[in-house]
Length: 164
Image (cartoon, rainbow, N blue to C red):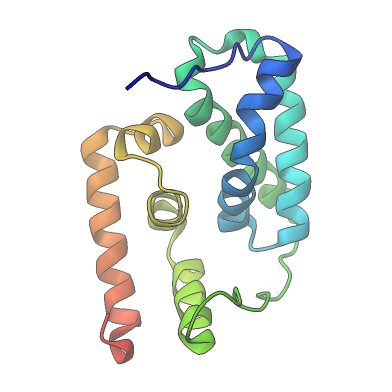
């Protein structure tokens, strides 16, 4: 089986091809920091512009995803530091069989301290590997594993009524 070809992110077409499938991931990561879909969308757009300007600094196309996630996290933190107010929690995703549980899970994740929230979102919602999360957050792999473990423990305590 042949490995998928990774586009050359230094070209317009390659950058667009590499960034487009990450749109939902980037928005979710930013929302994890800002708790506002509108502000998250602004942060992602700004981050994509910054990434485009600095696209030649990507060491190789394989590290594009963690590099771009790091830029989105930094831009989201910049917006949060500027005192942007978060909107009320939006309604839960309608794909869940139990909307109350979905909303409670989302609230529990949103209430996690950021150091646990970001790895949990990246791992469970966006299917990033521990290695990619470590690159994106600029942390050792073992630290990411520990943060995921502690984040899960906090979520279990918060969601014990659901038998999670």
